[in-house]
Image 1 (tube, protein in one colour):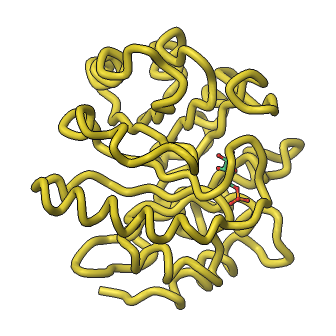
Image 2: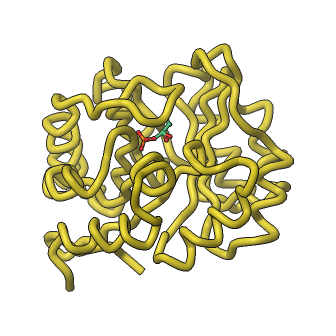
Length: 230
Ligand code: DX5
């Protein structure tokens, strides 16, 4: 269930498994689900688009067997169109691709939706919002990266808050307020109210949920306490 509600918009939490204990990934995923995670984000990295290599299709298929929450695959890979069908087959419910990673973004978003999944587009911190101009009517979610992608546990980039607010204003002004604004990187109970207050409706948190001194349940409860409730 949502971790909060602001301006009549439910705020969802999508813990990122990148910071989970990969030796006990199923246990961590189930713990996050039991603690109230709305989605589970799987960070797929190819070592080319980002300077790191993480997890891929077999992990998605394995997690599909142990949790029932939607699996959100954040593809930090070049030419993601090559793999969207495979991620759908592995059990993904949502796929986000980077605007910087594919030449034919419109075709890739259409491909994801034709597979029956929801589709998102992600922007790196230096990528301006105007790159979204033509694709916004076709997506279900925009992911604002509030860290440079590739690693968990980084500091939130403070200028991200203004970028989130400008995107919220842009979506609302174009009658596209139903598009989710997901924010990913350096979000915890300390700044979730700032991020959601700026207009985010889907919060990714990796190290705050899986790599902190608290349990996932304690962290998620802390986030709920920081946000207005219905
Ligand atoms: C970074 C990933 C993020 C990351 C978030 O490239 O896309 O999802 O795991 O981790 P935290 O919440 O620790 O910044």
